[in-house]
Image (cartoon, rainbow, N blue to C red; front, side):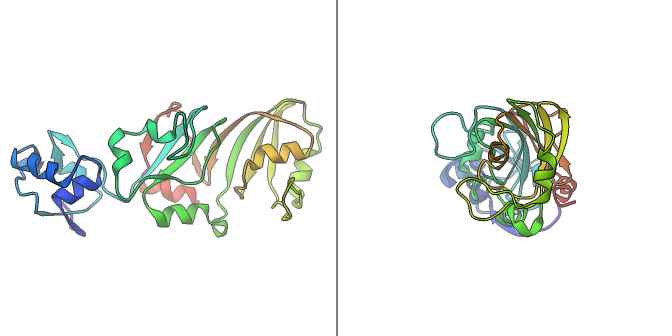
Length: 244
């Protein structure tokens, strides 16, 4: 196992949501925690916190969850909310229950509203979160938009010109790229993330969005084999692709 910053075993497992430090001490004494196949009975032992730790540390024979510094891609289904506290189904309900107890906490990188599906990123890495959402990063987000009424043919030019004003705001929008797919469907790529921006942009040109799906963030596309409600850990290459 490679070296890295260390943390006491009981604190590490408690921070990963497995239970209290006292409970982790009991598990260790009972031989239920192993390191490279050998029982680790001393919960005071410091363990290196490395990306490959789940390959070495096991609880009841199962690899532990990834240590802090994780990033996830999730295919957000319709009807779930990007919140820790709101009523109704939450995106966090799609993750293992113990993950809600992790420290640092896992949070969504930006939000998709309840009626929007598609690619959603989550992380416990505050620096990564702020880097993705920072206006300086210019991370483009592409949405598949279904509309109530046929396009007029002028929307792409209007969005590309920049300067469109949304109701209730005083700062004009940056240019956005629209590709028409059919009379009532389009792809829209933004580099901003204002509240309900896509829906409000089409409202500003006299239309109504009936379905909205995010296909990509930066150079990272929602995988075809990631079904709605499923998630997977992001690799370093996946994270780099967001900024590619």
